[in-house]
Length: 312
Image 1 (spheres, rainbow, N blue to C red):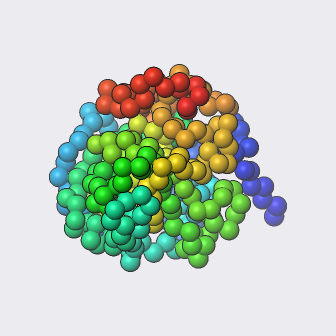
Image 2 (cartoon, helix red, strand yellow; image 1 turned 90 degrees about the vertical axis):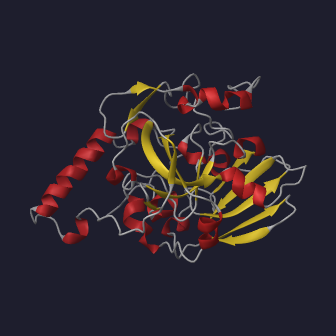
Image 3 (cartoon, rainbow, N blue to C red; image 1 turned 180 degrees about the horizontal axis):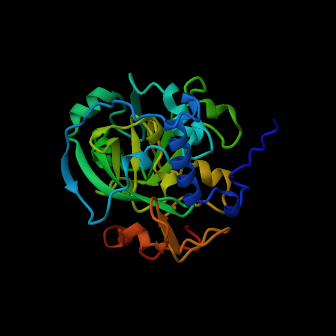
């Protein structure tokens, strides 16, 4: 069988499976599996028995949460494949423990911190945030984690530091998608230092009160809720402070389509589709996209005077 794999940087929105069709397909497949019409391997995988996490609720939204099954089965994580189904199906090869993250660069206290120490070092919080992807779909997720600022300050940034660079695990044995040339590996991302120190930016170790599933970026994922989802880098192994704007994976792959800032902005279209509306996973009607994903009052001051057509 000849399978054509489309480079996402070249794909058109019309070539993507419509979300409503995707979820209906899943329902049909699930029903067929229960009826014995599909082999067990084709049935939807059950959620693993992930350990619960104790966290205090510090931020909520008056919006309906996206179901756990949707959050954990509709993902972008190209290290495990380019289909939305691939991460849940393939991420079992990832070994999230033992795990450590290196913090270095322009810091006075470079260090390597173990995941267990991180969980004990910083009090865990539950924050319900919107996640808005550049493709036009969104979710509302109860994340569990701690402020990114707390982790950065632990390393004592030097005065010359202006940016924070992030790097994902780069291990083809654990991440089969790394064998493809869809992106340059490892996956890298970056923020300005003032963005990284903003109270809304967080490092997550879980969602829905449990340890972060592999397909959602276990064991350490960045969440920056006012930016498009590709900024929220997964399975972080290194955080580096620098005085220069760091490269980012999607900007490096398609610079005319994916800028460094990636702030949610309904007034600036993606070159191949509008960003004015979005579709919440589980809904069939589109809603207006909110500036900065609804966090305009809290973060717009970071970008006062910037040209959003240039700095997109």
